[in-house]
Structure formats: C-alpha cells, structure tokens
Image (cartoon, rainbow, N blue to C red; front, top):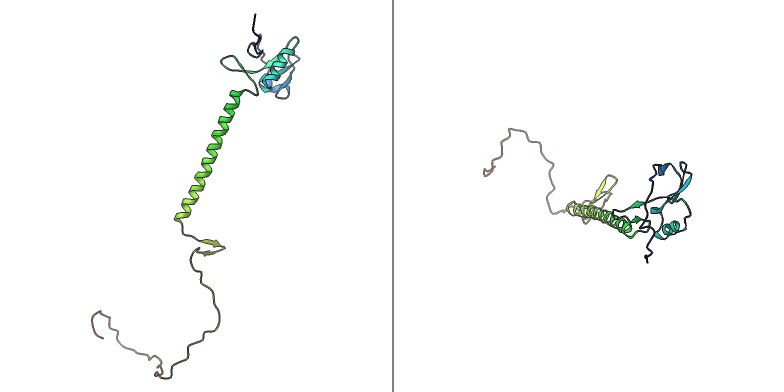
Length: 171
C-alpha cells in the first residue's frame, strides 16, 4: 500500500522548454506560450494549496515553471523557508537603518555639546543662556554739578620736547 504524499514532491520535467518567460503574455502566475500554444503556470508564484490543486486537476499536458531546492522540493509563494529569508533580510535592513539614524542623532548630539550655544536670526547671532543687552535711545542727562568744587579749566595746549616715560622715575 503506497502512502499518498504531496504532488509537489514528485514533479519532474520530461523535456525542459527553452522559451523565455519574460516574452510570454500574462501575469506572474500564468502566461501564454506562443511556441507550444499552452498556458504556462508558475508554481512558485502560487500558494502550496493552489499549486497542488492545479496538478491534481490537470487533464492532459500541463506546462509549469517553478524553482526547486537542492533537496528536490518545490518553492511556493507561501514557503516558510522563503518567508524566513525575507523576514531575515527585512530585519537586517531595519537594523541597519535604525543604526544609521541613531549614529546620525548621536553625532548631532555630540556636536551640540561642544559647540557654543547660539541662534542665528538673519545676520544676528544670539547667544542662548546669556543676557542680551537692550537698546536704549534718547538724550543724555548729566548729573547736576556740585557747586562746592572748583570749576574745571579747559585743557591747555602745551608744546615742548617729549621725554620718554621710565617706570620708577619721578616726573
């Protein structure tokens, strides 16, 4: 008594076809071959259940295209090993992107620590954390003069030979 297995395990191609899949009309699951005038089904573009159903229900000649592992099993669209590879690649790409973003943010943070704080508005650089002086305009009001002191004289013009100043000398 033979045990019934999956029909995908026993697939063999009797005579391989040299027709180009990319030149056939159709989609990723089924295309029409102009050479042999048959529909060519892509088993690797179908789920395992759809591929098995197609093989079981086929009457007569069936032309298929598929990818096969070294152990002889057919790779289908819902293959867990294929999904594991896709997930692994996605995980690697996401980790690399996250690392790149974190490195960029860390670099900006480190650069911010060593730079002088300030904000540039137009051509004006404002320092953050320091007092910004206020602009004041108007006439100056001098303090009232003290009448008890002697009036100041205007400076006199003095002409003569100049003597260099030496520290420690009188004069």
